[in-house]
Length: 75
Image (cartoon, rainbow, N blue to C red; front, side):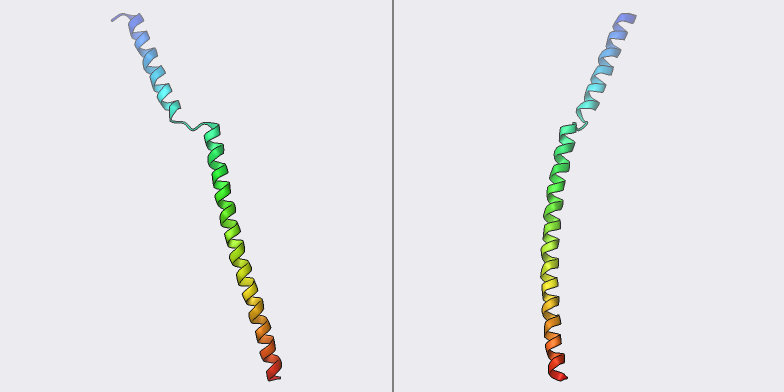
């Protein structure tokens, strides 16, 4: 095998290796899409937590009102 052939084989090997490695990398668009999806999921979770907290807050206010009425009746 001549030096020219070895050099050509080496170039092909390097090219194939780099091509394979870069094919596995996520593109900027892929990363942006994943962040957008995660942002939507986090918004859904946050909204769900907010609804539950509001329900608990309303229940606590209701209990507070009932306790005040009971204290007033006992006094």
